[in-house]
Length: 282
Ligand SMILES: Nc1ncnc2c1ncn2[C@@H]1O[C@H](COP(=O)(O)OP(=O)(O)O)[C@@H](O)[C@H]1O
Ligand SMILES: CC(=O)N[C@@H](CCC(=O)OP(=O)(O)O)C(=O)O
Image (cartoon, rainbow, N blue to C red; front, side):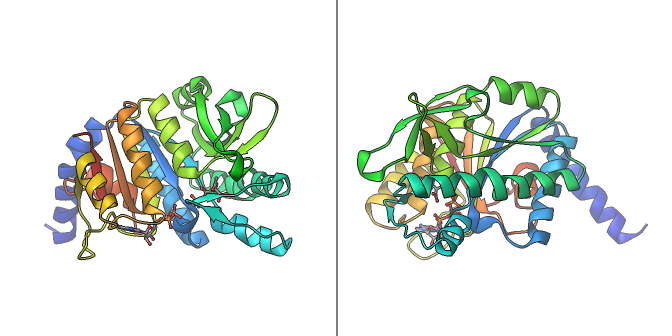
């Protein structure tokens, strides 16, 4: 018998229990701007999401797009700065954030998924009153913290086998538009859906220890210690905080993994060793 065939059959056999475990599971995938590569990489991500849908998983995609916002702000000669990983957002910046996230980035992902045979629907947190926000801190301008998530529309869509693709914007109670950090939005949505998995796709293989090695399993206590020691720093801080908040909100596990690695999401869900760093409640 052909060796390749035996290897394929053996891989499929090993994947079967995982395929069964995730049948009808809700998996929230956050695709960060740095994890969005070339058109080929986007197509590969889209293929994985469509395959998840085909085997009965309910994928919900929440995206970022920080580098794409930066590029547009530069073209428009609008200066921008970050405080603690959040973009200080005045009214002019908010307009650009909404145009880039809800327009260019959201539709690129929707089109990629549809191009691979999926049925993606692009939304922002404003649609169906999905995300209501309050201001995070007056010093940051129109940066919002989600305080009410209405997951009904998402449930209706996933039940009908649509794949929601969500831009991290929210509505204020007085008609404002708020800019939400993509990780924060994904965590809040995952908690509201009581998702089985929150996959945070980024540009590193996982959370690294002081020796630069990826730690494959982490507890909340380990994360707190590594943050206090400065081992978890920069953009990894909001990511691990989001993971912990999501677990507290009822998500079963959160995983930080490299979105640019081939088949990252599939390896995480459907193989024994998974991918990246998995964080479970203590
Ligand atoms: N302990 C750590 N392990 C891995 N990455 C870390 C760690 N501490 C800080 N980082 C940094 O966090 C970055 C990921 O955050 P960020 O750039 O905000 O990602 P994204 O744009 O995907 O949301 C990594 O590229 C890395 O430079
Ligand atoms: C408040 C805030 O900082 N919002 C982010 C939203 C996009 C984002 O989170 O993009 P990444 O996931 O690619 O970093 C921003 O304006 O850049």
